[in-house]
Image: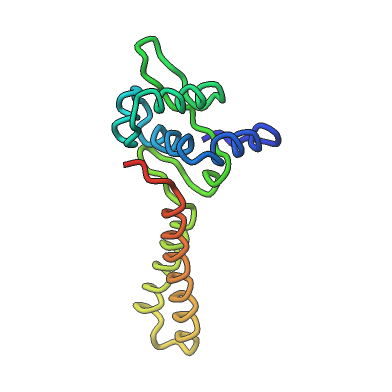
Length: 150
C-alpha cells in the first residue's frame, strides 16, 4: 500500500475517510480488488446503482479506483486516515496491533513452559499476560473502527 504525504493525505482523509459511505466503498474495494457498480450496490446495501456509481466516481476522481473498459472498477491501494493503522494483504485488512497479540502470546506461553522455576517468573508472566490482554482489546477495537462492508 502506498503511503502518502502532506496535502494529498489530508485531502483523502477529508474527502474519503470523513465521508462514511465513500469510505465504506473504498474499504470494500480494498477487500474485493475489483467490482462492478451492481456488486458494490448489492454488497453494501445501497438503495440504487446511482449511489454506488456516485461513490465509485468520487473514488475514481481521487485516484483510489480506476475503471476498466468493461465497466469494472479496480482498487488503487493507498494508505491514509485510519488505514495507516492497518496492513492490507489480499482480502484481509489487519490492524498492526495483531503483531503484539502474537508477541505477547508467545512470551506468555514461553514463560509458562520454560521459566516457572526462575525467580522473576511471576513478574515476567504478569507483564506478558497484561500485554496480551491489552493488545487483544486494542486489536478488537481497531477491527470495529472499520466500516462494515459485508
